[in-house]
Length: 350
Ligand SMILES: Nc1ncnc2c1ncn2[C@@H]1O[C@H](COP(=O)(O)OP(=O)(O)OP(=O)(O)O)[C@@H](O)[C@H]1O
Ligand SMILES: [Mg+2]
Image (cartoon, rainbow, N blue to C red; front, side, top):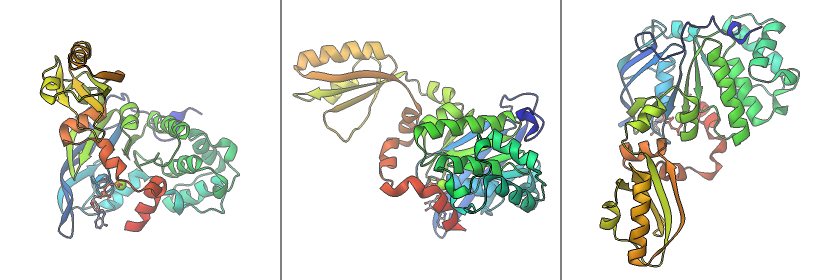
């Protein structure tokens, strides 16, 4: 059976068409005590896109998602999902969406296939064995249909939790950090699963910490920081609009190079602050001109440059330009035992 039969009939076009939004959220605000977690967020998601909400810890991603899912009431703002009002009529919204559950909430002693049929019952969506097999195939777990959940790897459990989010043939599937804690190979496998869900006709909204994931998987991204959306576009447009082409990096040996001279190099738009005084990082609109100028400058100051490299601009550069600090700084602040954090978090809040 084609993947398109698994979720819903495929839409005519996968292209984001903002005039056909499946989600339209305006002016969302959520306060916890005195603190503002979400501070005036607008999101418009088109049918059939993979939409990413990217941001560091505490940016407000989960809170935003929960309001759109109809699970948390906003303090201000309006939300429509597939034509239903998520504030006034959350029950209708929940009928047309699928929400990925935290893996820790799975029942360890059931098999993958049993769990799918149990969830089908909860949703009032009968799941005969053939339907469970379709869903398991979609997430690449056919061979594990009879395996107990506690015998699946972390990545397999994440994929199973996506299958569970699909049992009621939702129009919109919400995934909160579906790949956190997975190794690179498992993460790529999960990306393929997410694309399969979209190709089956559903719209996917996911949150992520990972720049690379947002860049390669998502059609459009909202970058959130401190409760606000600081940018929203396709990954390519976000990078293009920066007006910079690349980052030039090097390690400087011997003396340091004067900041004013670095800033005056051809093409340089920003000198990126780094923790390591010998590490040099320049954003530039013309990598070649900057490299030529940098080599001449090093020569003149008799300093050596090692590990000289230039790399195309990425979403990290977008974050730095808009948030005024590097993304890695936030990520380094995460506790070491963080790899299992997202499942724990969702439970903690409820
Ligand atoms: N139930 C709650 N009670 C009080 N404060 C909360 C609650 N939930 C979230 N917050 C606060 O709201 C802010 C946004 O949290 P949220 O979980 O939405 O961020 P996030 O972007 O999902 O972060 P992470 O990447 O760590 O999952 C944070 O400062 C958080 O501490
Ligand atoms: Mg979160």
